Length: 250
Image (cartoon, rainbow, N blue to C red; front, side, top):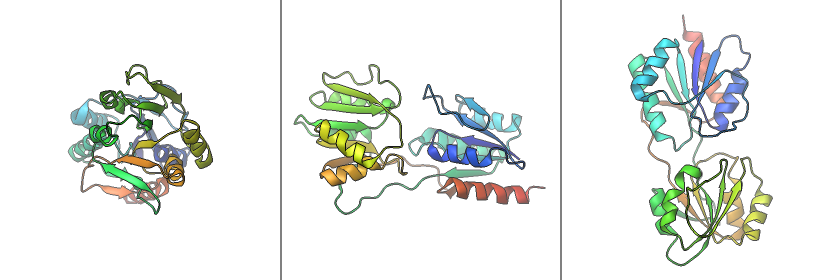
């Protein structure tokens, strides 16, 4: 069974590992290519876009894809919409592998906002020491608030994405440790954390550390994803869906 995994997440990697070497499946993992040094994976991988809905639909037909698993990042709304449209057009079954969002716990000081622009506004006018963990592509809006000191952690170098006077850039990749996150925030004298509500365990330690330190956390809500798509919350559940689909395939 020929499978296309739209990847870039921990769950996509876990599903790829689960499918590797399985005689019933012939998987292909597609990556957007935003990370220059991705971790090696045990199945064939392609990098780059498809050319919108029409391009992806053509790819599904040409490659004889029999199932698609959308395991893209929770904030990759465009790719998810394209996947839903292309799969409907090519009549290919689609599963959305969507990790649950984080929810506030007792002791959290969350400031929920719907967009990155409103996250900037939520920081206020008074200069603050801000821990930005939103990804390199989401940094430009914060240039409108140059009075803050930003501790920025990304996988890729930030380049000129945040042209403000006071920026400390860290390159690192999840998973993270709560004690190390707490030590980093204390050492940098962080006063507020800004994050996307990405969900998952790999980057949750910053939330737990901020709770312990009683720091406010500006949490950007997830964008809307296509409705009416079957969903799974874990790689194991996605694998089970593929097994069921394979069993029904003539």
